[in-house]
Amino acid sequence: MTEQEIQDQLKTVIEPYVQNQEAFENLTKETQLMEDLEVNSAHLVDIILDLEEAFDVEIDDEAAEKMLTVGAALNIVQELLNAKD
Image (cartoon, rainbow, N blue to C red):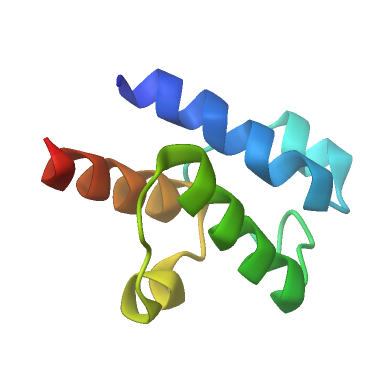
């Protein structure tokens, strides 16, 4: 799976939880999930669960705590997918 495919899937997973649509439309790897997109902590847990399901991976607590930006989420998912290969 390419980085672009992962990023596209990531955007699909995040979109229902986003409160700031303008920030979502201008999404970059530096975009903060909670601050920029205004995702609350409960929804951040939902995003992590949805990512696990979408990519068939298991995100541990340590990785989940680092998932504060779009880029961090992308890197974590990519690492987990590479570990499966």
